Image 1: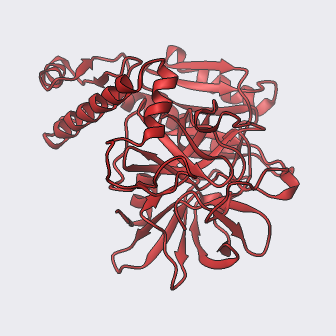
Image 2 (image 1 turned 45 degrees about the horizontal axis):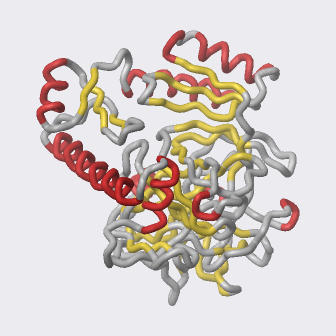
Amino acid sequence: MRSSRKYRLSAACLVLSASAVLGTQTVAQAQGTDATPHYQPEMVQALAASLGVSEAAAADRLDRQDTQQAKLAELARRGIAGDGAFFDASGRLTVNAADSAEAATIEKAGLDARLPTRGQAALDEVKAELDAFAARRAPSGVVDWSVDLASDMVTINVNNDRGAAAKAFLAKAAEHGSAVRIVRGEEKAEAKAAIYPGSKMTFNNTSQWCSVGYGARDRSGNQYLVTAGHCVTNTLRYDGTAFAKGYKTRYALGTRSVDMGILTINPGHSITTSVGTWGNSNPVAVKGGSRAASGASVCKSGATTGWTCGTIGSYNNTVTYVDRNGGPDTVITGLATSSVCVEGGDSGGAYISGNQAQGMTSGGPIDQQCTGGVYSRGSSYFQPLDDALNYYGLTLNTN
């Protein structure tokens, strides 16, 4: 989410890079060490507070989460990928199985299995059909739509269904019957934009900003900044000095887009391999970029709201962002959701789960206020990092 004076967004707590505000329904930070304790303290505290349990119980849950994800990864290496997986409220990982034989193998590995009515592949097809329909005309008033593995449905969040485009979209969705669930009364969304990941970076010679994402390299060793696509501009500055140049973006206002982009790093500058926590703890070292399952704990670093934590919601969301400058709505595909609070200027900033980089802030609810510090209640959308790295053929820089 980009931030500027016209949006009246606070520029406080910005350190290394810039944040942009485009549409509000949805923002991050950097640097870590390998020292004990095993988990970032604020992540444990946020999880304990949200679950109403002790920090020891929260840390135990994180241990069990890591163990279960390792078992899932081992099944995948054996060719048993399942049809989607998710953590339930108790912290148990459930894997969708294709048949009873695969379910038995999954359970033998120590994970819960189920035979879904639909499963991820079938739900992805439903969502892809809705994406194609929305590509012809942005369904203004429809906030987002995504595959919800836990409920085994595609969930559509709606702010206003009175417009013709929204009505047509919902009618199309209704063709899928019980495979689709509609939730009304949601806030509209807009993209967000604010040399540790999470630092402030300003645009060209303006006062607008986004937040720094992650550093990565190509096969030749050339260095890039991976960030939200709507944060990509000609020149980005840190503390007044130009450190990156716009290179590629998949974001375009008013056009079906993906909110990912990259910039080249100017000689003499670099993006650290630790995410800053804005004074809440030591920076968090980035050890890899393995995607965490839905329900996993995550924290974000951003130039406006600093270090905030929560849990990952769902992946592969499609969101309709509004433009506060009066421009057209923009449909964004491929986003993940979280309960992490963000504001304008946090866009592009870094999400991290444990020591694994997860993505960059894209957007969040209009006029959302993160008043509880690390424990602020809220929600956000982020662009998964692994999708961006794969698309651009880059390798994450790790600590």
